[in-house]
Image 1 (cartoon, rainbow, N blue to C red):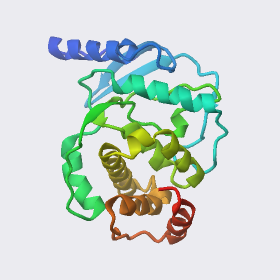
Image 2 (image 1 turned 90 degrees about the vertical axis):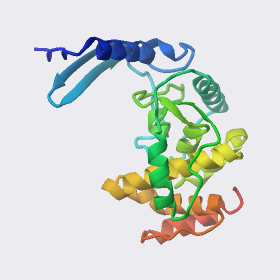
Image 3 (image 1 turned 180 degrees about the horizontal axis):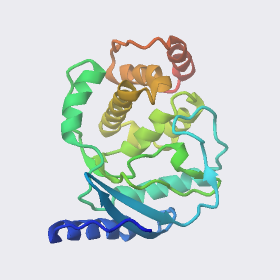
Length: 248
């Protein structure tokens, strides 16, 4: 038996309906992603739930997990498709929010270990969870759209770069393909914001522990000063520095 639909006040019902239409059709249809076919909302106090049914993706993700550990074999056409998709996403107007200013204000000085301006140079629309486990290959589709919304400009590329730090050849390719975004004040801020978020997650539950040392090395490069670190994974940090010294 299907769970009962939640009883909501009219204002909240309209808000949910607006979110449904945005999730299905507000992003341009030309963005490569599975089509959302059906959804169902219900409540089980105190939680609200949503189930969604998408078209089957014909190709598998480029990585089995968010943290990249091996270099995926991606044709040049794949990178061109990703550039085109991200360009369309960033210009999509929305009131949804991916990254909250209050979090940046609190977390960036804490995890970066230094006073820092937490105001992004600019904001734009982002997919919100762009790593290789959410990107199919050889034909590109962008998966997992539940977190899309406004974020610091270049947030998606910064996320892809941060999750790929253990494979320096891939981070070098990302910096090559998206230099127009990453090699800017907005790009540097976006990287620091994403690094903060991933270090925060690692501190909470250890999910990104294997990535923490490389994240701190990259943050130190962007800030121009070392970060105090409690990580014992120095081998990863040293390996990343050796591979990346000529790529920044």
